[in-house]
Length: 238
Image (cartoon, rainbow, N blue to C red; front, side):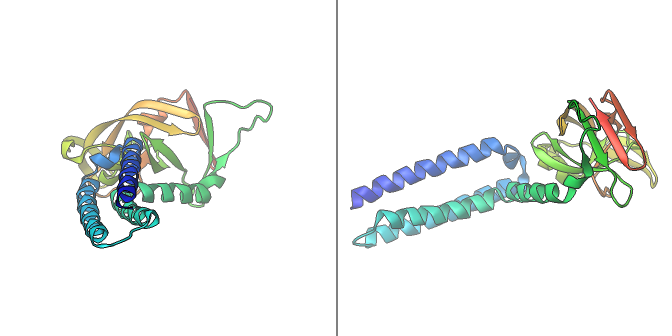
């Protein structure tokens, strides 16, 4: 029985390691996130403590079934994954709920005879503004379309979500706003995807304080072949 349990623990540990590597590959920003790095260390300590306690329990028990081994491994996996990938799981949940809430703002192509690739139409919200969810690098960001903004503007938190290292930011670029001149940190965004539209190498700015919604500015819109805005509909075409 002890040999069987050892094999079961080894197999479960190997499977757990493969899952962790796959998740870190799918969410590389987790390692870049300072808060996530701290949670990874804490989760590893918790995992080690549970593993040590369960090992002592196994040694003192006369009979331990393979089923009990996998139950313990399952508990350890849930604790580790929930602590380590908290931000990513929250982002997935937010993205799903955003789809449910904002799907009515996406309009189909007006030409029903032929689908136009690289074309997106948005309906204005009740407040008259155009909001859109975009895939920025590997993170989903809810933007407010702003033709008066020179660059795509992000908060430090959103910049961190798309893989920007906050410690490398330099707030040395002066920008004139309605509240006066502020200093922002220039960044380069690898890719922004909205529907069928994909724009690469988009200049952006991180605003340290005072930014409400992330802004989809002219550094993105200016790279489109055309974009037009009426009172109720915004049309973007690559």
